[in-house]
Amino acid sequence: MTDRLRTSTRAVVIGGSLAGMLAAAAVKDGVDTVEIIEAHALPSGPEPRAGVPQAAHIHPLLSGGADAIEALLPGTIGQLVASGAHRVPMTTDMVYLSPEGWYRRWRRNTQYLVAASRDLTDSVVRERVLKDPRVTVRPHCRATGLLGDAGRVTGVRLRSAEGTETELAADLVVDASGRSTRTPHWLAGLGITGLAEDRIDSGLAYASRIYRAPFSTSGWPVVNIVADPRRPGGAGSIVPIEGDRWHVSLSGPPGAQPGNDPAEFEAFARGLRHPLIADLLAGAEPLTDITVTHSTVNRRHYYERLDAWPEGLVALGDSVAGFNPVYGHGMSAAAQGALALHRLTSGGLSDGLSRRAQRAVARPVGLAWSLAVGQDIHRPDVRGKRPSPADRLLHRYVSRLSRTAGGSFRVATALTEVLTLQAAPTVLLRPDVLLAAAAGPLRPPVDGPMFTEGEHRLLREAGISLTAP
Image 1 (cartoon, rainbow, N blue to C red):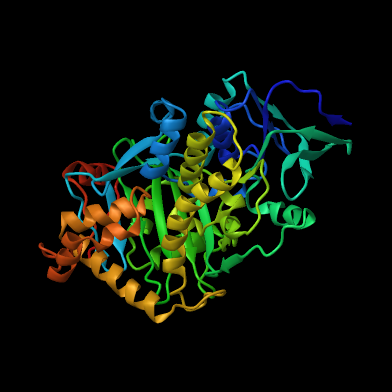
Image 2: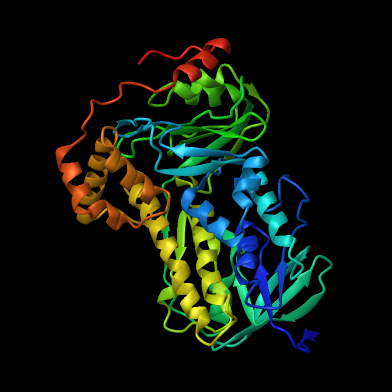
């Protein structure tokens, strides 16, 4: 049976993920009702949600994404912090080893990230979105197809958990179903073909575990040991999250991947370019098992390039592009895409909106894609694309910028603005940045991890000894 007797406008969002919730927040001011179609039950609090296996890994929210969420849902970042999340100034509260050396912890911060578990971030956003009576959720239900034709999508076909088939009419359908999206297949069924897709696979695997920190994590820095893609070896991060816990993720390429054995996990951390993470974990208490995933492929659908695009359809989040999670751009790119959608729909739905929206969504996706792929294509085992001479030249320039950033606040600021999706990469080509890169770092390089005296005191009290550089 088709629901066609409507006198109000309706948007349907496929997927109750973070991207789906932000999509609902984006379009609710432009329609009368929003219905979210979700295959599973949604938890009532900060609990694991079915269908989000990547939630076991670290999920920092970059300032570009946090600002977008705050614009869509004012007060969200404050609620996250009140619930235990950490607002981490960059690079002030970061102990960061880049391929070019240790970053300096500048007293003046440039951007920030919000450090929390994915479960907490999802929960706070979901709570704020579902407070609006215009937004409802239809759980235990899957979208199985689109209604309409190549010119206009008019709704979705649904299947309940019991197998009942129904049709739901809509003035706008937003696909936020993630990496499992069926939109390319559905478009082909409408007669829209020629969709371009890129897949860049670095071959990395990730292993993650949550620990009880040996002291309060309030004000404790994020720790990053970044792999050098030009050389064998892994990477690792410690992100302070709510409840005085550390979320730890390790990653490695084919032949040197972390596993789920606790002894091997700690040995892997010890074998990174610097043993800092292993030193810190020696004083922490494991709280969870180790979760391993190999789903690190960068995949992008170029919907904005299609000659034809149906009115009434928009794709958002991982349905458009999924990124290697080591770069932490997925949530932020989805949030910026949702904000772009909000700006186009807040005054109501109009002809041509869907194509404009899809092109607007593609802009933050393009930035995140260039950052992720710009690193992964230089890994020796990458599949899908090899670096061109221009890619190699750009990589050398960014490497020089990274080395310069250790002793130049100007360059550190420019790099941080780009990495947090606050500015386009063209910022790195400003004359002042080019001159700074040519001059090189203004201060001597940092010879080891930088901790404040207060942080050293906490380490001493916890009995944690750091390996000498």
